[in-house]
Length: 195
Image 1 (cartoon, rainbow, N blue to C red):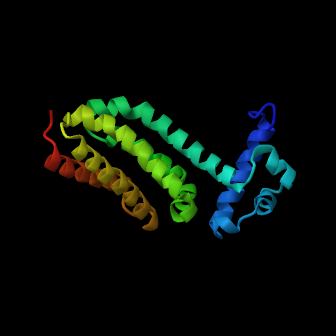
Image 2 (spheres, one colour; image 1 turned 45 degrees about the horizontal axis):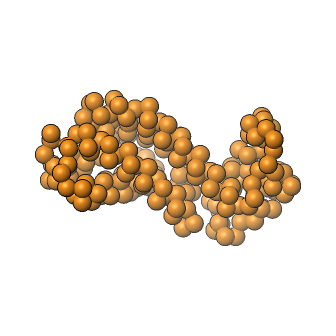
């Protein structure tokens, strides 16, 4: 590893390697992608690759972790407003903007079977943050019902996002947010009474 990992050249190299990997993942299975492929796609040699990552699995993990960290920071910035407002809109709008800005990356990660861990981690991140909202808004008594509700909503939101991408985001963002809010409200009403 480099002594100063935040060096401008090191950041640029890591960015180019990530872009190369994602481009290759859009063309072939992850298991068919070699370090040489990634390095050549980034116009680097394998030695430069190994200065940053031990292999393609670590590189993919770095891509996934970076996205999840950015998403958590975004949620953290809007969660209090969301709790106070009683609606998912304050957090969902910037999350959708984030998804649109990272659409190509997310589309590759959603499509790959090797990225099941990423999708599971994304669901867990949403579930963890959603649990605080459910507790704040509904004060549930039955933890089992809360767990089912959160699983339903988080997997449902991931499905909505994937479908939105498949349909080339033709549904306006506002309509997608409104649909997600109606689905959340409808399922919450059947399980919880507002506190």
